[in-house]
Amino acid sequence: MTAETPDLPLQDLLAPLASRYVDVENLPWQPSPYEGVEIKVLMEDKTSGLLTALFRWAPGSILPLHEHVEIEQSYILEGRLVDEEGEATAGNFVWRPSGSRHEAHAPDGCLLLAFFIKPNIFIDQSVP
Image (cartoon, rainbow, N blue to C red; front, top):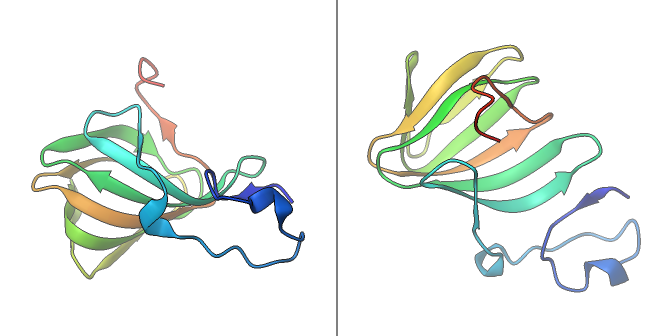
C-alpha cells in the first residue's frame, strides 16, 4: 500500500487492510514552503498525489498563485480563507474544479481541512 500517515507510530506493523487510527493532536505541524502556512498530513499517497491534511495559516499569510490539477476541497474549521472570488468562513466549505487558479489569503488566520487528488502547481516557479 502506498498511502500512509507520516509520523504515525507503529504504522509498519499494521496489516495491509487494517484501519489506521490517527491521533491528530499528536502529529507534528510541518512548515510549508510558504511563510505562515503549516501542514499536518493526515494521509497521503505520494505515488498518486492524494492528500488529506490540516493547514494552519497565520494571520496575513498568503498562498501564491497556483492551479488545482484536480478538484480541491476545503472545510474551514477556524478563521477565514479569502480569494478574488469570495470568502470561506468557519463552518463552511469551498471546492474548486480542476484547472482553477487563485491566490489565497488568510487575513485573520485560518485552520482548514483540505483534500487533494493531485498536488497543486504553483505558477511562480521561484518558490518550491
